[in-house]
Length: 147
Length: 249
Image (cartoon, rainbow over all chains, first blue to last red; front, side, top):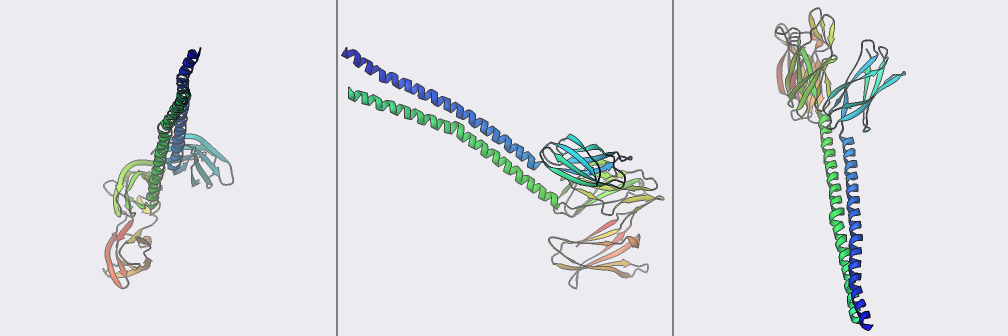
């Protein structure tokens, strides 16, 4: 009886060590795996946010030219994207003290010039305020005198 | 027996501590450090692009190109010749010219303090036609023709202004510029004078000689104090030549 007691006491520390090590390794491995996944997600999100912010500050565009159709119903707004990233813009045109209209969601590739038409019944000899608003929250403005 | 138990207990504690430490170091070097490095790299790229764009914006702000237009001449009577003069400190690439509502793509580099012919274009002028011209640079700046609208009436070209531009970059601060006109008997008469201050790198003075007509011969004298530092005779031959003449001192 004494001998058996001794043997069980001798075996349990080994088993306990194995079990404890297994628990430590499995819990540690789980934490390791979680930490790796979390850090990857955090790093990816951070990089994506940084690149989004970077694109926001480096995009550049300008209203290069404006003209109107002979009947004054259509305004042709030429927008030049001289930045390094493609842009998507909304064009708003407002007649001084009058109505306004817009053309939304025009995509312009980098280094390209695009003519955007805005339907606007502008009387001759009126001033039109044009605002080009990018989806990254940048703006370009232009004042046009309808001849 | 107690001694043996104590020995086992100590060894168990050691194994867990070692494993825990290894796992902690593993997490540190395989998750946290790479994450920090990636974030740092993203920050570096962001800062680099921001500064790059800042420099390009400064270049854009410093871009100064003058455009002038004149009839090409008898060889192509329907054509207008476009010329650009870059009075900035950076080279400028002209990518587009506008003639009223039409645009034409070009690719001409105008070096600092020099001029370049951008091209000659058929505009098919009809009596009463007017031409508003401008050009666009690769940096997104647009420059209109310095002499205003060019028009075609009764078979002749005309511009809103004939100009003599004097650009001074010599050492000194205050300069006196005299404009002399050659009379029919080949004597000289001073028709205008101006005092200019050079603030920064250059001083620019424009003389409007539209009322004098063409062809005319002028002499420009630039003085620092009472000492002449530059003297140049120039011909205004519009429409056989440009409506703007540049004098560099």
